Image 1 (cartoon, rainbow, N blue to C red):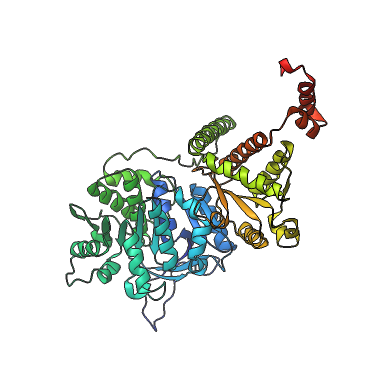
Image 2 (cartoon, rainbow, N blue to C red):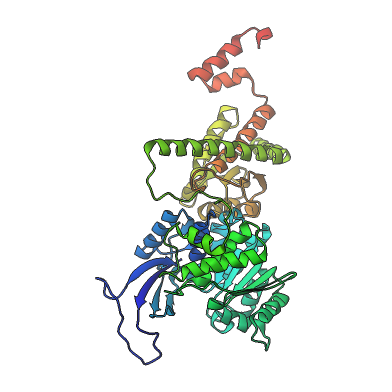
Length: 540
């Protein structure tokens, strides 16, 4: 994710030379600022072609970051970002009259993304993908490896855009061993021409021979080498393909390879054969070079790509934003459709959870809680964010059916509230990701205190699951809603599992209607319970 600052120059100069920039505006010399960066460009062009796209990573909370997020929002690119980086990435791009360019990149926050952040902050977002694309250009190789490993562990195909030759990628981004590991993990490698020559380790200058050598070495499903105005070559199983580029008037070559990958992502998603995939990717790259900048300008470019491609493209798999503001009636219809979709998704997810529910885990949780009560221990429920509200509800629900429970504030636990927890106690900790840092810190302190932990989480491989004495698994694939990010269905799943636990605790205690009425001395529920308690036995 990079803000590209474009400058027009008469020519690309060498060391110790000087030139005057052609065009400038009120800022001095910047002709235009555009959204950019390899992966954001991939996603922008894939979005133009109709795919639903999302990006994760790290940026600064600064004007460049605001500019990039606004561009993502305009294109409907979902973003799952942390804003704790030193500064958002930017690049100075010098473009000459022939459309050739030189780029000077400031990596900023991109260089700060760690393996741990990928796994803890973004794993859930990555798991939702049909395809994952990443790059060897700015990201640390450790982060690239973590991304590719997460995708592979969930059988998600990956495209790795190798933009730098070996000598530039290492040691700037990481070690040679890390580079080799990343190359082996990728499903599809897309090296640029110079990168392919450095990876192939063959004497031949034939790009197809180089692609085949790279594929044999790293065992990828396919290796695709982009050759600029010469098109591309593809080496895959039973495929050795040379695909010429489309002849267009070049304005700026910046991002042609990125647009190519956007077309390739669409071709993979639509399951096109390699010949059609190469033609579509080449068409996207060709349209890109006819205008300034690497990020697409608007959705009308889909028609230009389709015209070059020479055949009708599949219908978009995600609705493209409409430049015209919707009328109130249209907006109301959209809202109703989205609400109905959300309810349908909720029922599907809860039905799936019901089928996969580990009833033995709930039974063991009942045993742990009753054993703790027998030795004088208590029950606490905790969570951070939306699970905090679930924790308050669960503690109240348990109390209402005869299992005294208290809410434990996770962050306050580290500031004195840990005294609320006794070694004989049981703490129920709730987190969908299982990697929320504040909750993990609190859970670690609770374990040190000697109490048992029951985790309610959607991630069996999380830090919370590893800390817990027992895991009640509550996974969901979708959250629902326009962006699919706000905790909605995961909260329903957590409540679903904890409500089931309350039922089991109620039965294990042998709660009577008389006891229930004593716990509810007021309100409609209490009145109903008292009426039932005093009704003749035969009517109960």
